[in-house]
Image 1: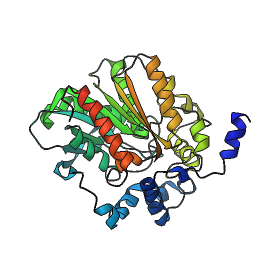
Image 2: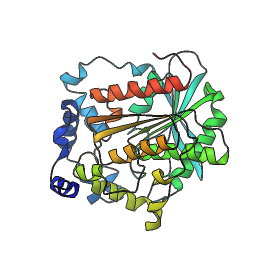
Image 3: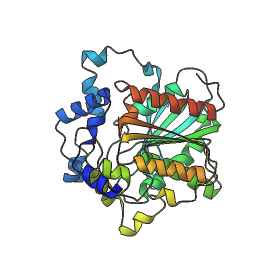
Length: 340
């Protein structure tokens, strides 16, 4: 049997049957909220659908999960503010850990396919990183498609980097210890910030953490076919996101989206996290190969029983706790701190 025959046989399967038990609990909770398939929604409808974050909150009301030990992220304080984007002010949330600064500073971008989600949907990850990496985390929003198509979000992301570089000290941060991080579409924005900072001769990040990044235009990869019916992200959803963000088909070959085709030399030390039950897994794996080939120091960890979006679910998913610990260790080492 050829690989093609194998993939054809997988088309009708539900890969979430291989999820870890706690991951499966999140998926079941999400299903109980009756979300409409995103690819069948208008953009307005899609922005109002239940999210994996809502599923986690539902689980947290159940004794089996609410009785778990606290992650002690409550000690992180946050402040909402507006910062300079490429075409006007954009919302941001600044997370500051306990203790005395100056702290390292991490610029974080949330996911949502450049179309959905906001700072509230992705509050858990930057809050956790602030606590575990002992860093100030600036979670920056960006203009979203289809109202603002490529490269609006990327331009806002780089403007946010400008803002962090200029304002790190006033935030209580160390301007010499600045990093970038993102999830999914946000990871795509993060690595593009690093690339653009290098190309423009601007202050460069000392580290980048890329969580299940959008990094390729290959929609027939092994993971896209294995996980075409996955939850909470599947192949039809990714096609829906892409159609909303591109201006025309030529954008699909832009290195902003097809990052694996970009010049990846002289980028900062990198951590890539992938999930087994995720159409984007092959994107992350290919990016790791390309970064290695470009001489970039890169660490990669894949979580076979986890799905897309798992990283911020540390309150209920054990794989997320491990992944967050792995990333924060790499960040602290890049900042020159003694690991916790």
